[in-house]
View 1 (cartoon, helix red, strand yellow):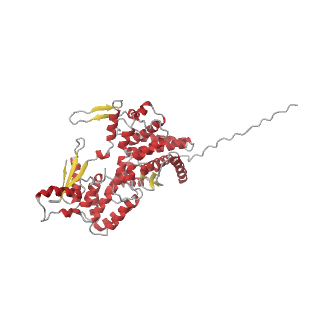
View 2 (cartoon, helix red, strand yellow):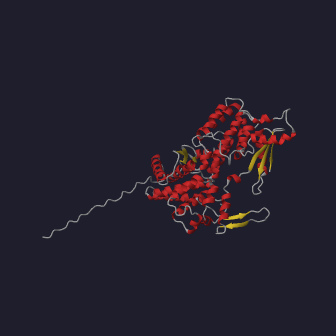
View 3 (cartoon, one colour):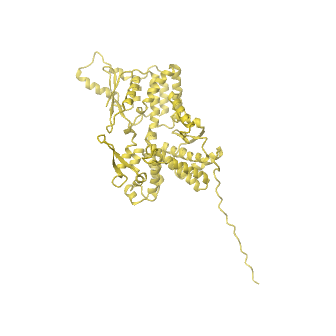
Length: 506
């Protein structure tokens, strides 16, 4: 009798589908918390980012406008210009002429990110990846921010500055304080060190030193008065030697106009010098951001793009949210052509992201052209290390000079114009072909050299032997003179702070 074989049917275990982080467009704090943890997992363990602790705050549109007006800082002293900016931005926003940023991020420890409460949950995901991890990593690791800023002390310093200026208004009157702040704000671009290393003390130490100094009516000995003429003056032949010694004592020439006036002005009182010092420190804090716009935004955009795609690949983001994110991402990277009415220059988001995505391509799938231009990274096993090295060790000018590839020049259809003042017309000096690649790259890099774009104005001498006249020297670059109206305003504010005549030679 034949036995019937029993067929065993094994039940195969199906992989459990991962649960979505959120559904729909509305958000709550539970969804924010889950999404933040998922974003952090990819940022730290996949990309290997190194970030400050994050403090994510949800704010209203009015609070975002307020942050706009106070240059994005959570603590700031009062000044009429901040209120003016608030009203301007509010009117444009209410009329629909201007939108608001989805987020604002502050270079501090902890790193503070302001997210708009009007954002959908998809946009909250994008901006957390963009700001809390992309910008955060760049702030913590780029050499300019490490050299010139003090993330640990900036919030305490701003709190001190706000309280101190408020006390000055109580003691000396709002008008007197406003007059000093007006002049200091007008000279902020000339209140930074561009080439020299910054002073060693941190912002916390500076704050303590300033508090100690307030106990004294007069500041430390002012070297100005030691050179006032007297009856024992030596022979006339010693005049040139005296001038050289004077310049050496005063550390001339000096590019930081606010710092020089704060130390040596014969007319300022102690509290006025302290206000100049505060404004100069804040100007120096923001200076690295002016030099790294392409890199900073490119880094944050690349990071958020990688993270949201990784989340989607894991099945953690719904398709609708991913479409919304990609739509916003594409809008941010929009680059109108030069002859388009919307053209306002090269979009730093578009150029930065394109270059960083291109570095990954060169590392993973290089062409013969890539191997010729980038022999050190073409075919590299680890594009993450290449990108993190670039984020840490370059600014916009040097980054473009080093990593702008022929592929990106062709993609953006870049060309270089020659502007000879003797000619009636512009001429195209180079285009995106083999003959023009290097010239186009050099020309584009120069446009991001902030030190070369700002007017070169330095203190070169102080006539202490006569009328104590402050002498400035402006060095033209590429034959471009200073705008006469701007020159007169600079001299007006300088004279107000210096207390005596100020002249400028070109």
